[in-house]
Length: 184
Image (cartoon, rainbow, N blue to C red; front, side):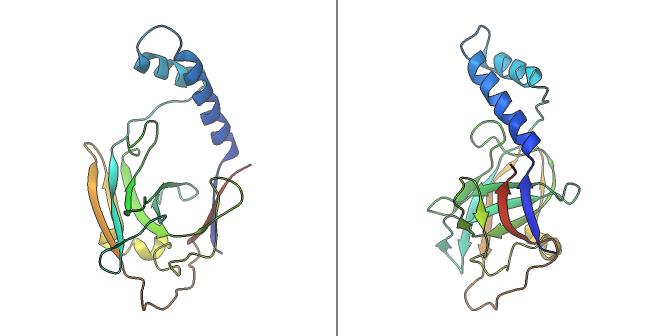
C-alpha cells in the first residue's frame, strides 16, 4: 500500500479559525504575543513549543534542488507529515506558527520528493520526480543521515546531498509518501 498523506480537515478548519481569530484580535489591546495566545485559546487549540529547522538540499554534488519537498515523518504519528519546500537555491525552513519558527521537538525521519503541483493549491501529485529514492520512511530510517532529533535551540544548517543521476528508480514502499493532499 502506498501512502497518500492527507492534512486532516478538522485540523485545517481549526487552524483557519485560529488564524481568523488571531487576525481579528490584532486590532485589540495587549501585546501581539498575548493576543496570539488568546486567539489559540479561543479556538480551542494549544500552542506547543517549536525549534527552528532549516538547511539546504543539493542534488548530485552541488546542484540546488528547487521545489523539492523536505518532509519530517514522525514514526509515532505516521499519518501526519511536516513539510517545507526548497527555494530556487535549495534552501528550506520549516514553519509552524510564524515564518521559520520550526517544528515541535521530537525524533523524525527526513524524506524528500519532488512532485508535480496539483490543480488545487497545496496539493502535490505523483510521480515522484526523484524516482522514489528518498520518500520511503522505512528505508530512510535506516540511514543516520536522514534521522533528525529536533529540540531547542534547533538546527538551521542541515545539509543534504541527494544522489539521483544514474540511480535506478525505486518502487515505492508500503509507507512511501507518493502524493500530498489537503483533506477536504
